[in-house]
Structures are given as C-alpha cells and as structure tokens.
Image (cartoon, rainbow, N blue to C red; front, side, top):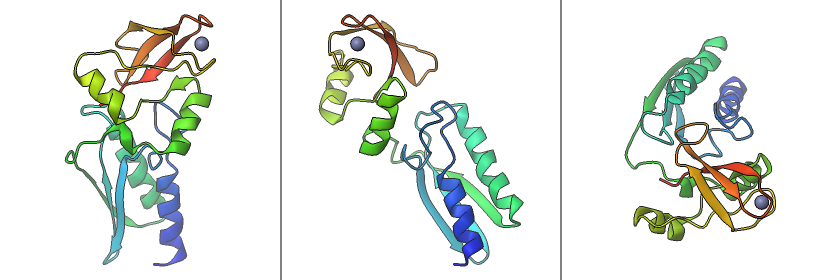
Length: 161
Ligand SMILES: [Zn+2]
C-alpha cells in the first residue's frame, strides 16, 4: 500500500460524526473495514442507527476524499451485525462527556433499557445520577434529552441500541 492510499485511509478514519463533531466515525465504531485491492478502495460502514439521515453524507464524504486523490472507491453499508453503542471506545466516551453528551451506558444497563426500565444516566457536567428524562427524542433521533436534578443542567444522552 503506498503512502497516498494510507493518507486517504487516514482521512476517511478522521471523518467526524455529522451530529457529534468531536468524534470520528472510526471512534464511533461505524467504520467496519477498509481494504485496498486491485486499485480500488473498499470501505464498509454500519450506521449507528438504521435510517440515520447522516449516513448518506458520510458515504459522500468518503467518496469525495478518494476522488480528490483519483482513487476508485466503493462504499458498502452493512446492517448486520447491527451497530451497538458498545462499539464506542472508551476514549470516545470520554470525548462525548466533555462535549456535554452523556455517553451510552454499557451492556448491563442497556438490557435494563430493553426491558423498559430507565437506564442510570450520569450527568456529564456534575456526574450525578439524579437525572430525569425530559424527552425521548432530543436534538436528534439518536439522542434523548435529560435534565440533571443536581445541577439543573439539561443534557443529551446518547441512546443505547
Ligand atoms: Zn448535573
């Protein structure tokens, strides 16, 4: 693999999530695989949430990065296995928190959410778990709006799925 290809791959990995610009699609776990075979770059992505309108933009971004360097590129979206919030790395969770979004809770409370129980959501400002959901649909469909009863700040919670 030559340096040009490596450069393009690095640029693709660094594409920010359209909704949470502090996190890259790689950190979110959306970028599943990149291979370079017979002069073609093959990129596989999985949406964080089925029907997420941002996916089209990510695909366009990937193709335009490759096009700029005259590299053939195809982007494939795979839905199975479905993306889960557990794919978000620890570093990315910390970035989310700093950005003011409560990162999704890991698998155990995830199951509580599936069973219809409210997950324990920690306030990204003061770390209190004394929080309450205000609206299941926050600023985007992927987030829920919460309010902290301790510091009274509203914040977005990245929903588990
Ligand atoms: Zn708080």
